[in-house]
Image (cartoon, rainbow, N blue to C red):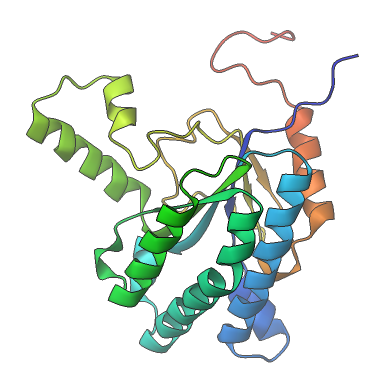
Length: 232
């Protein structure tokens, strides 16, 4: 009997922090803090289930339009997460990667990211990719500009090699929490044949059972990549 397929790469749009806080009469910052706890739980759970790569949508290019106070809270949470979790992630063999246009991030945050990526770059147990100041359309435009500047032939392969995720496999499964059913400019090129699962669970409440439910749905699907399936 064939063992159930475990997705090699899972991507998550972590949505619902603000609604979680509002439902409890709490400031949005508390929702983001609980969202960080959900990330810790989820990273542990995906590793226990044999998932090699987890990519999370932490801060989009469009999020810069949010109130300055909320952006400041999110940057502080990022600092806190890296400082608090880096040693354990490194000890556990997790490689940290950051993708996006980071020029607008505070200088000290950029330094923390660079140091974390450098420290963990040779780790092989798993990979955590954090998309920060990231936009899928922007990534595609930058890749096209890069190839044009190089005078390179533009093919699917060359284009993929110019993306932030050039050395990573495309996600097998994308999960979005909070009931919203859209990509919101996340990994537009990379998710061409990704399986999508949308859950009503708000991100701060996301737990191992929600991850298992999403993986179970993934395992029940036939991935055809545009070809005829068994039932066609």
